[in-house]
Image 1 (spheres, rainbow, N blue to C red):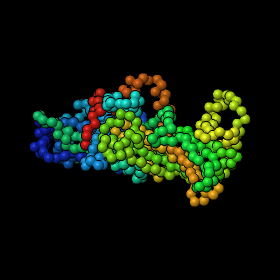
Image 2 (spheres, one colour):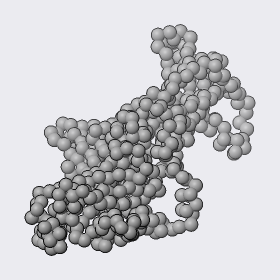
Image 3 (cartoon, rainbow, N blue to C red):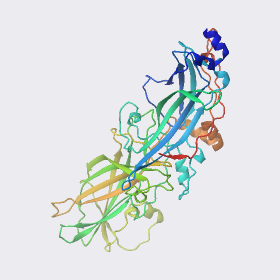
Image 4 (spheres, one colour):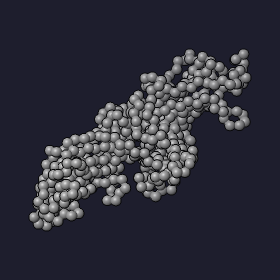
Length: 499
C-alpha cells in the first residue's frame, strides 16, 4: 500500500500522516558530543551535517539551511513608560540544494535517515548595504560592516564549557546560529514549516589594530594627562605640582578560539613630573593600581557616530544606553621608583628627534612651572587580562558597540598627610584585538586577490561532496555523489525592525 501511495507523489502521503513532523538534528564536523558549542573566527569553515528522520511517512518539498547573525537591543525609556527595541539580521548565508539532491519522491520514510552536509566560511566583512543609515562620521560605515563578535550568552563564552561573564547587559545581544528548516509547499498558498532546529555557535572575528585615538583635554571619557597640586598638609601651602601622563598602550591581542588558555597581556608606561615651588623634594610614591572598564553602548536606532558617555541620554528618551563594568587588574608597590633631577641651564634649542622621543614631550611642564629644576620618573605597568571573565574584541555595529578604558591610579605621600592618601588618576583608551587561527595563510592570500574575489569567496557558497556511497546503498539522501551550491540570496540588508 505504501508503495502505491509513494508512486503517486510526495503530497499523497499526507493521507496517512497529515500531522506528522520530521525530526531534525544538526551536527558539526569534529564535535565530541552533541551538546558541544563550537567557536570560530574569520576564515574558519563551519562544517557539519543536517540529519532528517521520522517515525511516519512524511512528505516535504525543501530543506533550508542557513547561517544567520542577528543583533537585538531592548531599552527601557526611564521616565517614559514602555520599552524601545530593535532587531537586525546583518548576516544570512544560505546553503542551496539542487533538485537532484533530493530523493524521489520527497518523503521521509520510517526507519531511515537522510543527511545533508553544509559548509559556511566566516566572512571578514558584511555586505555594504547592511549599513545604509545616515552617518555623521565618514569612518563609521567601515566599522559597521565588520563582523561583530558574539555577545551576551554566557554559555558560549570562552571555550563553550564554562559560564563566563562577557560583561554585557541583558538589553544587548549578538547571536549566531545554524538554522535548518523542513518546508512543505502546497499547491496554493505560502510554504508550511514542518520543523525548525537551530544550533548556536560562537564567532570571535579577527580584529586588526586601529590607529590610536586623539584625546583632547576636554574629552568626556578619557584623560591621558593630569596635573595636581602637591601640599605638605591639608591646610598647608602648595609644595609643587605633579604631572602624570601616558600614551595609549598597545592593544591586548586576544587569542583565537583554538587557543583560549594562553595569557593576554600588554604594558603601559606612566610618565611623572614634579615641578617644585622652590627647592622642595618630590613626593614619595606609594602604589599604582589598574582596572579595565568595559563599556557596552546599545540603541534602538542606528548609531550615526561612534558613541561615548556624552552622546547617551541618561533618562532614556532617545532609546539608547550604556552599561559599564570594571575589572580589577593589578595593585603593585612603586615606592622604590627613583626620581631624576633636571636643571634648565639655558634655552638651548634641542634636536627635533630628541625632543619628540623623550618623556618630556608627553608630560611637559605644569601650568605653574617657572623655575629651573624639576623631577621626572617613569613607571611600567603590566596589563594582563584575568581568566575569570570572557573578553571580546573592540567593535562597533549599527546598534551595539563595545569599547574599553584602562584606568590607572597612583598614590603618593607627603609630610603631614596622615589622614588621606592623595592620588592622581588617568583614563586611557585601549583596544582589544583578535587574531586568526592561521594568520600567515590568510595574509598571503589577501595579497594576491582583489576585494571582489574576497567577497565571492566569503559570500558565494561552493560545492561540497559527501563521502562516497557503496553501489548497493538504498536510494535517498545518502546516495548523493555531489552536493552543489548555487548563488545565494543576499542578506536581508539594513532592515532594523522595532521590537
